[in-house]
Image (tube, rainbow, N blue to C red; front, side):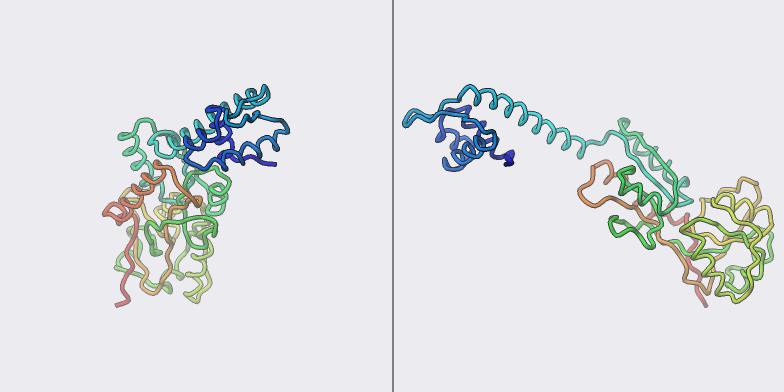
Length: 311
């Protein structure tokens, strides 16, 4: 037989006041609720907790006094647990574990972390990079408090918040023939040597877009990081497709590149935050708001290339 926390509080009140009536008044319930809790507790423990004297109240037995002390200790620890959890939920301190897949995350997550640390020195961050699938599983396994990922085909158990939509664009060397255009078409792209970003969430939709060009693809290199793709393009061995871009910084190889919108493609990805369902710590809520404000403002606009018009 189980005994609820509420029933234990009623038993605690009965033992404290030595009267079912007085215990009921203190607990704001009917005397029958106190009496039923006592009966249930005695049945659950298999011992008499009180003796009942008509018109004189109730008196704890030796077993009742011992069990009463244990109930007091249990309820004190239960109340402390609720207080500690409430403090954790509302506190603006502690560790925030973030998993990220978006290749461009280093362009803005450190800046947002610095802003929060300046305002709340008790905060610490753990950033972990992974692919779209692994970080979603990490969130569900409790490894992360929140994730930054490409939202297409999300796990249905994950609560998402869209941050920004990034159309696919063409990246070429600054002195490439295509760089003279304001925008390019898929058919122009597929005629060139190609460098492919080979990540689980990217390879499929890049190949799907390229196959629309109706030509055999000449893939000269693949890489699983955005920065390697950018450096390969800057080295002039081919052109590539990407979605998000760093804010006006050179590649590791130091050469310049050009970003060109694609006029005849609707390809793009949605960068989103992901959370486990249910109530969230205030710290998580605040960092999520910071991410949303950044992506929806002018700084976020610098991370994408607007879609070109077909006209």
